[in-house]
Image (cartoon, rainbow, N blue to C red; front, side, top):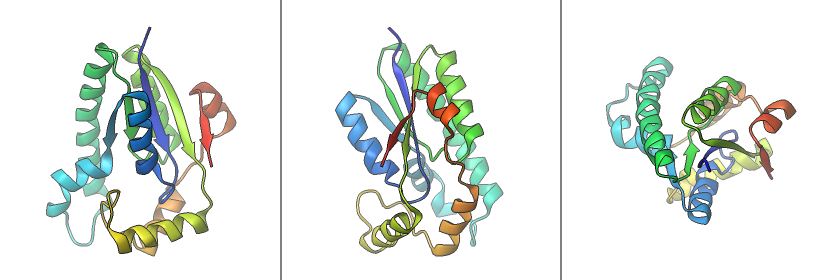
Length: 166
């Protein structure tokens, strides 16, 4: 029986990391968070202001290494929980195809939270700097990500065994 790769999606402040932590504990999987990788490996060297192309190149490097780790885990039957943002449908599709290529089932978890609630959460996270804090997200960054966000459609939810979490 194949193992599973869980794609966690939702716009900024939806609670993806908290959800991924809980899911990993619940199913005995390994969680990969792009925020953890980026803050550990690259943020200290980031240009000021942060440049989109610079960031995306480093995210691609992290994701390549994450894919290798996920494949190794799948080979021994351990599920992976991917907290990589998955802002765009093409990004989700690429990882779903990757999951299929390693003979793993894919499950999409969509955290569907209203923008006002998410902005409130981001402000609270910025102030508290708790366990899921990776970097300050200002209103301009929040709004930029809102413009990038592509919510999963019904076909995508069906294809990737989607679960909508409100």
